[in-house]
Length: 398
Image 1 (cartoon, rainbow, N blue to C red):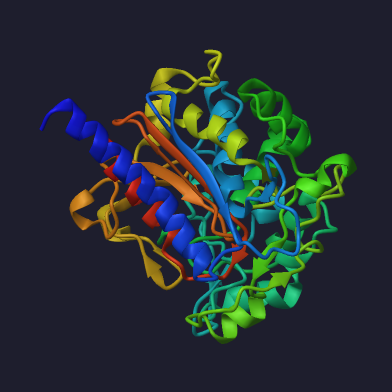
Image 2 (cartoon, rainbow, N blue to C red):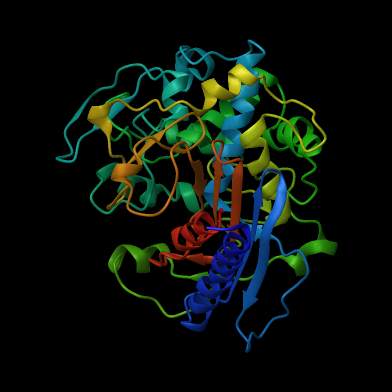
């Protein structure tokens, strides 16, 4: 195939990105979708599509609630402290946070047993035994809902962690991969070992270095018109009908995900606000270990260490609720494709990243020097839009 044909094919496949996004908007799955993709450090494709009859103005450089895309950023901060010798993966959690010294495990039949000690590595890899509030068949998940732990945007991170320590674990540490509040616990560990509040720590160490001016746990009043409205379903609606196709409707998440509490609100597993442009700075870091200006955050060998899969074969595939992730392992900050022959959507060996509950998504492929960020705001949708966008981007690589 000659160069002209390759260029045509790449252009045609890049058009597919907009086609996929437009189809999802036209099907009333999303009010808007924005994306940016880079190859070899250069802009490969970017764009946005919106519904034509929005009752709000789509802003320039919109700000998003990124939910669990907060996790890789917090995990990176942990890796930085590991490299400095301030934190060790083998350290017992109770040595740093004594409130976790006498934990119990509550099994699905609601019997309890004494928990083994949790170590820091298990917080990074969601194998510490914690849970989330949205698993219908997990009794610990129901305890989280009764406590209101996840929906309380008024309590501090320290209070959040203290409340979590009063609740049992869903399984023994290291027993299995179970998506959880582990990164929230890790975030509190980072505060204790660094002596700094989480928001200030991330600002100084990551956001300033990577040039991410719009990524914080709050939005200044003058910039709040850039925050996109949230669409989707409440937790109760999702739990009552997890497989239902929902109508596109606005919901208010400001109580559990506030934008106006810079002094009190921070979490490890969610809570950050960001933009497509800002998060691309982080995605690019995941390839290189340094900022766009060449400032290193971690060493080359620590980057290799951070990327390596940590799940043994008997814990694969990991399941995110009712959904398996065949082919993927899990490293210190997110998914890592270790067997493309098991994958159920187009990817590449070594591709990694994570997504957020509101259908945000990013990937970083070190082998292809290829990154992508997809942003929208819709909770509880079952759309395959995110992986369809990644597949379209991969098809455009000549």
